Length: 553
Image (cartoon, rainbow, N blue to C red):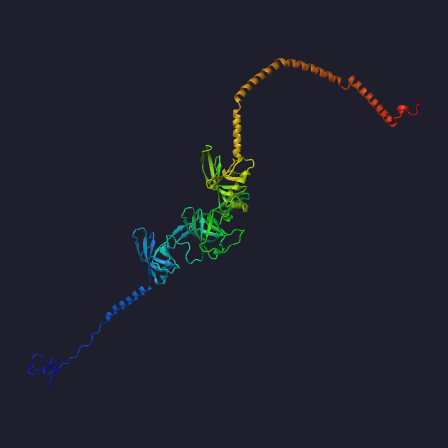
């Protein structure tokens, strides 16, 4: 029998039979030892592997789908919640608020927003952000939908190509978004009036735009406003368009009666602006974007031709200025040439009197070409010579009552040929024109002069003398009644008798009347005979020498 060879070499022959050593019983076969195969993992381990793979895929997808992270600064974070508040553009979610912190100076709130990959182009320089929440403004109520859904951050997409990640948020929604078509214009006015952001802009009473912004001028002399006119109405804004306040109600009383002008009922509350091309002009070329215009106080002021340079004039009045206010018109025979710019009082050392100076801005161009060539000359000497000539002809300033109900005064320029001699003087950079008192003041002066003269009459002496005269008259009447009247009564009795006798004599049946009647009849017959004789002599004058024909001499 061939011995088997184990892994440690051939079996020893001297091993005791049936022993427990390393040998095998003689009746058993020799075991065959085979090498162990490679270890295989259990199927349970596949589940975490698949989960990890899915997680990696989700992380990669999430990271690849993220857009840039931007930081927006707001005054308050009211209504914002990290992880919940959305960023929306046209009601489409383009981001989520991730974190809200305070700035280092605690003055503002910094909101970190994670934008989506599709919103990458929103992170540019001119993009605007604001918080949409319920608001009540002059233009209306907005953001009511957020009462249920909560506040969110609105976006106005910018058009810049310069990337930016830090923004200053708007506190109010913009009046005009970047996707609206139209033009923006700049208006300069004296005051804001009743205008506000969102106030309407009208063209021929049709709303075509709105006010988007306003600010005070740097020198504080006026207000600058930005207005946006929607397309296609922006084509009606020409280079010569005139703009004016259309706010509230314009009620006027003139020779035509009451006139009420307003653009719409909304302007009474919200205010408004209107524009139009003057009726006597053709519409100019379309105004460019951000073109500047003057904002007038009303339509009449806007449509009026430009005034040109102003001539500064001062007038010294020697009367009360009660009823005269700054802005009162300066009138020349119905044409307004300017307005009052200042009222004061000044002590004149030469005359030791108090004068009431009134400063005025005159616009010679309102008189037309003639006025512009006269008073509005560029040469100071020519201007003064022209004014000297007008003053010599009687040009004076006078205060007159413009409204009997309110007793408001205005300054009238007119010619007074009977006015005293005067001349034009220069008071600094202002021209000083002479004045005359108004008719009422002259009447008051005349009444005062009459009163002074009446006051000089010695009414006491006159009364004393008159009282003495009355006493003498009473004594005279007593004397007449006691002495003269009885004699006059007798005389009247004699006269009555005489008149009675005369009446009896003149009666128709009295002898005197009969004799007189006969005498008159005889006289009448005598006159008839004389008339017949005169007729005969006129026919036969020779009868005076020859006698009557038929009679012998």
